[in-house]
Image 1 (cartoon, helix red, strand yellow):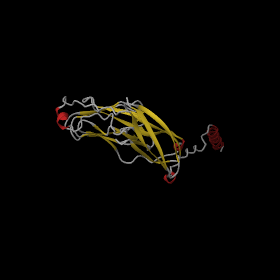
Image 2 (spheres, helix red, strand yellow):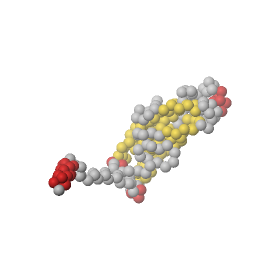
Image 3 (cartoon, helix red, strand yellow):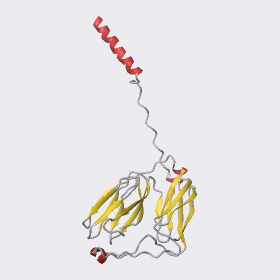
Image 4 (cartoon, one colour):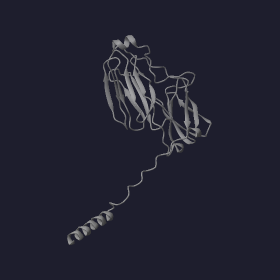
Length: 253
């Protein structure tokens, strides 16, 4: 009996020690999930990117160093300056910041983004992708290419693709404006990707137009990025069911 009482006292001491050390505390509640955005409250932004001055003449690439490129390329002109009648293409426009995005979560990107090495060029030249979204990189040419990404906030990669039809996939873990791509084999090949943690971005076509749709209501700072002309910003207010108009004007070099 005395031995049983000793074991009882010992068990009680162990339980008291565990409680004193927090062993009996209930697990901390999980942090509440960020609220999902309701598209019914959305507005839109549309606009135009203009060039003040004469559009610089496009540089012509000499592709004779690779006979395949020389024979198969259908476009040997640079994509740095594209546009017409004062409009500017290949400008990446995106929501840089805004209180309308604070505390919201957005569905993961569906589908894959793609970049192709075709005609000894990267297509598209400028594009956007979401954090974590799969980027499929293809070589459609009958010659060796490599795609060398040099980010500052993501992992660098440099992959060779010696055969036509080869593909591989990559993702980016962090937002970054912009990630440059180049081909170390063909010095004229380059491209740029903007990586964002939200879906609110666009690239202007040659007419300079862009549309960013389904934005939560709020005040935003938009940024327009061009590889040779730098960046410009504009403030915009988005209201439910309305389309706000925004324009950017770069000065020709």
